[in-house]
Image 1 (cartoon, rainbow, N blue to C red):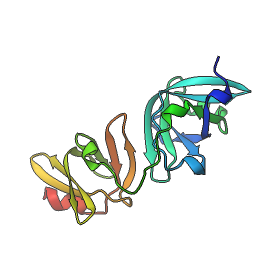
Image 2 (cartoon, rainbow, N blue to C red):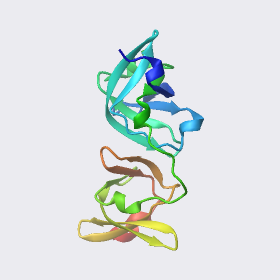
Image 3 (cartoon, one colour):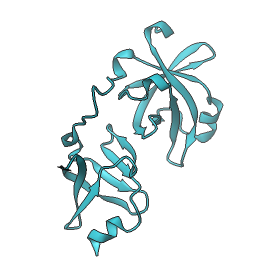
Image 4 (spheres, helix red, strand yellow):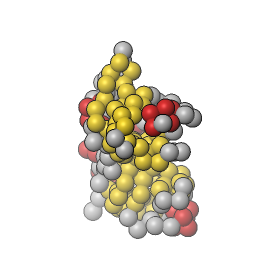
Length: 177
């Protein structure tokens, strides 16, 4: 039987998020820079730990998580669990970055979705232009270049291999007209 001493508390269940079944999880400040990739999240429900399989996990720029959990398939169910403490296997927390370096080549093959435009395409490569990474995509035969900048990124979902962006008005249109 798993106990709290076997696990690592990472935060709490905040609220339902959006209409696709996602749940916002507030991460403890000391763990924001980590890169968790858990198979299960354990919710403390009335003193007992209940495992929920992670179906999808996205890390927001704030460091909080957006997850879809098995069996928590309605807003009503999630609201009943608001405030529940969340734990994971300590081996699944990931390491904080040693510095500001990021392996941009790992983004190759990720699907890019813009909040206004929808699905744009798949990352073909990432060019680093004077320490400014640029996603190189192809959309209906046209090359699209999008700066991979924190102000545009709403989330990166490593499990589903998607990047969600909110690009400035007109940026994508420049390439598609």
